[in-house]
Length: 308
Image 1: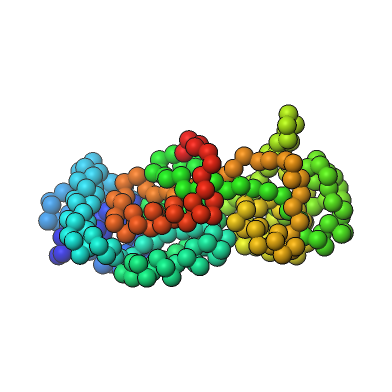
Image 2: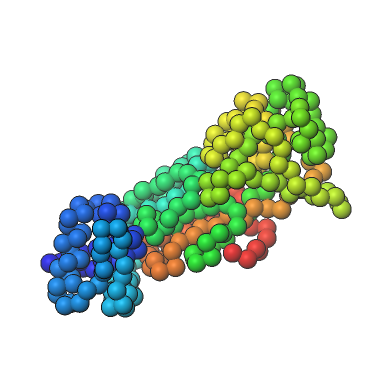
């Protein structure tokens, strides 16, 4: 038995909550993971996990051992990265999940330069707006806009998204140009709906002008849960859009989108990079976090200091 492999397998089973999920994230068979944990228990002469056909639970000894092993694995990683060669050239696989428009418009164009600087970092990148179980899916970090709903996560505030209202010329020709946000609640106007994957609910937009405030929900023919699809629907004239500057800039400059309500404002939407609290921040994750912060400083700089 390789003790290192066995400890890694045990940690992943605890974090994933099942042998099947742990095997998937470790790219091993369920049988191999089960055997490693059983061999570890035999060597330690204690039961680490209670297993039934329906659920898995960590024993008291298993919980104590897990805390020690997590720190030990982190110390081993630190020992490796403290070497000059490893410190100069972080390497390994990073599992990250980012919103689809951010990936398409900001990350992918900049990724060749990152790869040139850190050629030994390999990305498994999920591109979505869905809720990600960082521990269960063994994801190193996610980038998300909006308030953090899981307060147990560690997070870094990396940017602020300035939201403005737009519509395609063909939509305005058909429905008319609204002069007040309240008009978007009228029967002849439509928005493109956006459903947050984390809640399944439509988003309400709080808009302000002088002493006047209004929450706009609007009516929609189409609602989506993906940022790229949301933008495409607006460009096709399916309704009014609320977009961050980085998504709208090129289309507004070309006349494909027309800004509305320019004397109204919205509070910036904070963008966070979040990672599990018990996950060691490796050298490769540190350079990725710094890279994201640098990118967002250029495209969506921090203007507020909200509480995470």
